[in-house]
Length: 351
Image (cartoon, rainbow, N blue to C red; front, top):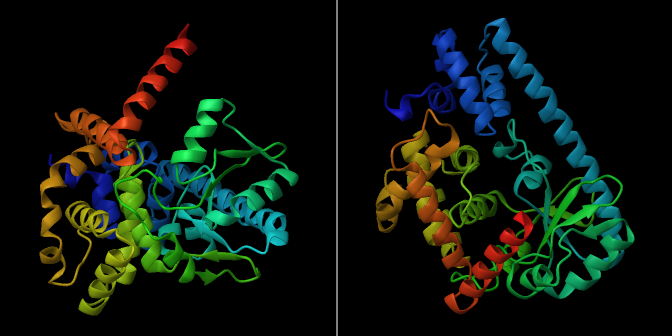
């Protein structure tokens, strides 16, 4: 069987397909969805399509739907605590990734699960923001001197923070990609186009076009691909909502140029269309031909979502993209010492 005809991918592309699933297809779809962090989305799509799964399947889907609802309620509550903690800084706080999807009712919020809250603030405000968060109970998780320098000098975010009482994880970004990355992005433009979140004066979300571009940027610079299929599904849902005509694809391309993210967008469009059949205006694929040479590598790595989807080269593709992610993140003069340090640190932990 062609991996693109697997039960999960058929269901994600065309939810009505689930009405024809037999017991074996449901069993494999549940396994694939759970492994790829897409079980909540599978259940939400089934419900939206009016599908009535077998009772044994329904238990899996309704159980996951309850977890998703609790996560979304929890993140809404956590955003309120962050808003209160940072109100005194006078700084706009931009939500990112899963948190932004939930708080903006983005198409990608459908059945979405995630493990932490991501925010973006302007770089000059980092010290004030970090201080305010510490006053309200967030502490830095990275304790070592090297890790502190790694984040504060080279990365696009502060060291990860955890609330000392609630144990919630918070990543505070000041850019979309590391400071040392080959691509220089424009977080100021994303912040300038922010959209308000109802009920808050200091909490915002990116415009949908910027949510698409940040998702593409994040996925196609990643070295870890265990959630690649989920993130590509996010992109598929958002692009289905946004790319309704030729004008919109032109707007998306123009915005990608402004943010210096045209190449990640090209990868996203091509991969989403290949895997999910994302409907695109006729000119779309022609605009992104430059990116086709990486199709096989990215699609090969996306297949790592479950062993039944994997191909003979999947592990090699994952390894290649892991190396590539480090190469994109920083120049060799910084990368080589960093990798040596990480290797030594891991060996020290084993000892």
